[in-house]
Length: 400
Image 1: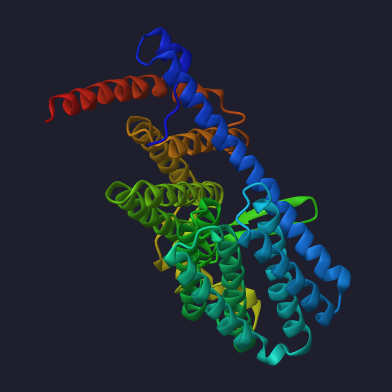
Image 2: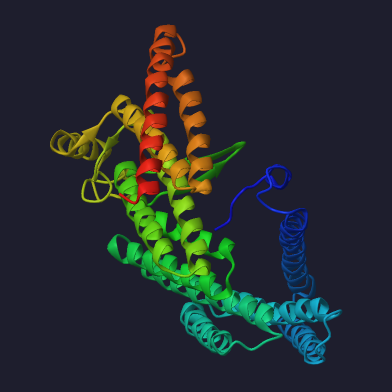
């Protein structure tokens, strides 16, 4: 378990020795440097690969240059030199990226009708080959193999998405694809042991209910047409991840933990939408949906159908949403602090501040008594949390 500790205080309290403190600090510094170096390396590889593809702008030239770079990288790695291994990794990944990326662009540009099928099958083959290599634990090429496998994953999912778009697939079929994509990305992140990849699984998982983002001039927005159902969806994922993290090895637990934190973030963003607009549960799933995607003859017919559905469907008002969200945040903050779930604690505190900031301008800017009541209510809540934490700690100490 990763924990935050003040090594100077621990030494002063004679919990650990000075030598042990120095070792802890050295390992923490090494982990931070590794993260910084790998980040710069990956960004450089991505930039170089895409830049060379578009600069050469010729399928044959890209293929030849990519094959040469891949061969040079493999040759360097085969020499087994630790000093130049980073250059071998970079050359091999750039070469493989040019071959895969160049082939993808050529397919989309010249063979669009068959591109989806070729990309989906080709990406699956690349994933299978690299997966077999990772399973065998081939040393010296794990970084390259993982990167190529992720490129194959992108090809596979991109090809499937293109097939669905060409077929005009919507509704359950599209949601099933996003569920499949989320699972595949999560497995890939675990296979290459990169939590950033695992975290990306939350994007297609959220899109199962059309939760997503949009960009307009000088504005970047988050939208959730089914905030209540999305919150329940994310809550189920959080519960599953926390359950898994307790019963598996530390490596798998770390991946489950980061996915739980991202699910909590998305759930809070959905709650923010609900606290501002309320929610007519199921309006876009089994209701009339949006007018742009509907089959209604005119706008008035769609309005009539929407009003009829709202009259029979569960409706949660924005005020109720605000209260429930605040209560849920208090509960999560307490639980996360007690269980040492630092990611969930930080996210809970952050969204607590966002909730307070939003409600100040949206609902209570001109009602000072609301702040007085809320502030006074927070005092017994804090006292109750303190007493409950003390009782739970005593119960754990006695084994009850």
